[in-house]
Image 1 (spheres, rainbow, N blue to C red):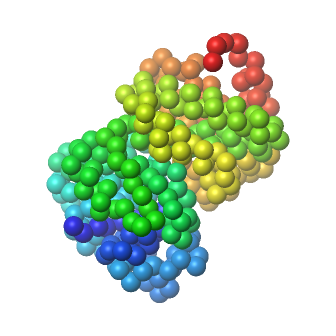
Image 2: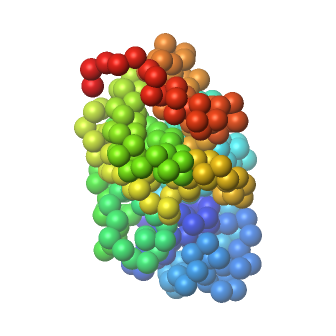
Image 3: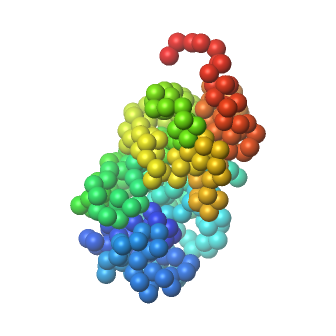
Length: 318
C-alpha cells in the first residue's frame, strides 16, 4: 500500500523522514526546489530526507497513493480540500492537523469525510515535536479511526522503529484533545511569561484539563481518550516546553512582548471556534480558560485583567 504526505511543513517532513527510513513514501509540496536540491527542509536543519522519500510537486501523482496524510495547518485544510478535484473515495485519509475549522466549526476528520463520503478518514495526533520525530527519538501518538480494521492497517503501515502508534476508535476525542490542548498551552505560556510561577502553571494545567474534558464529553468524546496520548499526554508536552509554538505565543503575551507573526499558532483560532461552540451549547460559563485565551489573543483583555477575572470566580468544589 503506497503512502503520500501532503504538505512539507515541519511535521509533514518529519513524518516523511521517519517513514522513509523504512519504506517508500511520497512528499508533496507546492514548491520543491529547496527540498529537491538539498534533500533537507529549512524547518528541520540537519535532517536529510532518506532516499526512499520521493519529493514531488505533482498533486495528481501524490493523490494516486492508497494512504494520504494531510499534514497542513488546520485552517488551511478546508481550502486545500476544496481545491482537490480527484475522487478519493476508498482511500485512507489521515488528518495530521490539530484544531477546529473556523468556517465550519468542524474537526479535520469531519472535513475530509464531508468532501469524500466514501473515503476512510482517520486522525494522527498526540504529544510530538517534529524535530524529535525527524531525529528518530522515541515518540508515541494516537491513530484514531472509526473503522477498526482500517485503523489496524494504518497502525501497521505508519508505525516505525521510533514512532509507536496506539489505536483508538474515538475520532472525536482524539481531535478535541489535540485541539484544546493548544488553547491551554497558550494560557500556560501567559502564566509563565507573566512571572506567576510554576504553582500557577500546575493549577492552570489541571483546571485546563478539566475544562477540556467537560467540553469534549459534551461533544461525544470518551473520557479514557482524553486521559491518553491525544489529550493528557499532549497537554503535558505543550504546556511545559518552549518547542511548543502555542506555549511560546502565550509566553510572549504574558511578558508583554509581540508574538512572532510568522508562526502558525493553532490555539488562537481554536479558542475562538471552541467558544462559539460552547456558547451554542450553553457551556460558555464552564470554559473560563478558553474564554480568557480567546479574549487576550484578540486584544480584548489584558493579562492582568484575565488573571483578576479567573481568581475572582466564585469558590466551588473541585
